[in-house]
Length: 96
Image 1 (cartoon, rainbow, N blue to C red):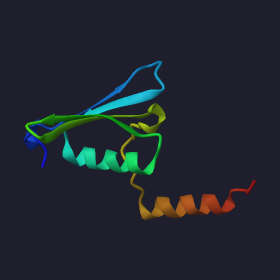
Image 2 (cartoon, one colour; image 1 turned 180 degrees about the vertical axis):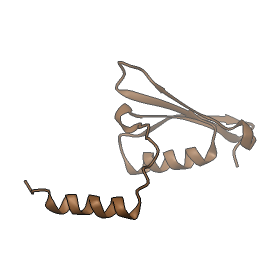
Image 3 (cartoon, one colour; image 1 turned 60 degrees about the vertical axis):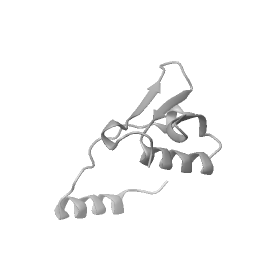
């Protein structure tokens, strides 16, 4: 477990309007784990700083292309009828 209590853990994402990179600071160990996997899997992610307090990792900073950050809308739920209608439209759609 990290240095901070669960209710003290947080993540901050900073995206400058003219910057190419997003900067992420987190003290949340679950987020650190996810972002550490991104660093391992892609050269476009980088862990730029590791904070240590009393020998325990307290926080980390990361960078990535700002295009990797997205803010999603609530997932749309469709009734069975709507799903069938959408499937029919897709069948009629001409291929390119």
